[in-house]
Image (tube, rainbow, N blue to C red; front, side, top):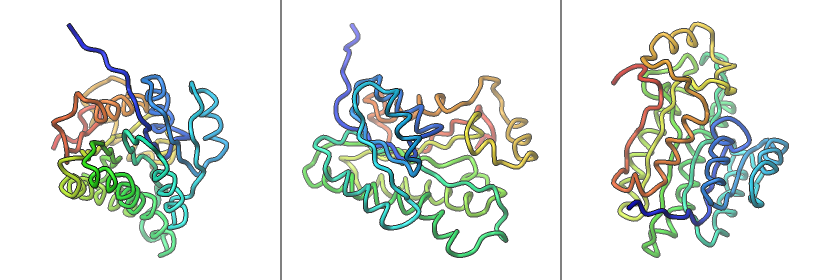
Length: 246
């Protein structure tokens, strides 16, 4: 007989107003979790909150700098029972490296690397101190494994993979840390910005014809925070229709 369990605790989802984050918020709310939803898009946060059961806690924060990250860390510290942290927020411009200046590079690295680093620290450290379990899912990208025409994005997403493996060692055995590496996710802001030749290349490499969309990725994230993945930590799960076997 299959035992059914009810999800409890609060899941923190960054980049929750659109795309993968929004699809994940719907899934986790439906599974019974309380939610702390984070995004710079205040209108988007209000919109997603309005379509969810219950009353999720929303925090409008800019993760491209220290103050916004500290704001979310403070919110995490107020959660009585944190169930999972999903570092989903990301910045992709689709521009070549010569178009960047240092402030823009720093801002994008704050969103893509420093925020996952510091939010995980705020989430996991108290759990380890009281020997309580938890889990973190970081969002990388196929671009972090094979490179990107946007060198800032590609290099930062490669850093997320290394960060995941290191965090898994830092917070074991209490907090599991894994990474999802999506390919070309249809219907998202990144798909709209990606150069046409890269779009065609991704599509050509895919071995499955199943539509890869935000809910496809959200489903894998939900698996990674569930008891079904209890033996996984420090892993990178490509969700890319079999593109770029590696």
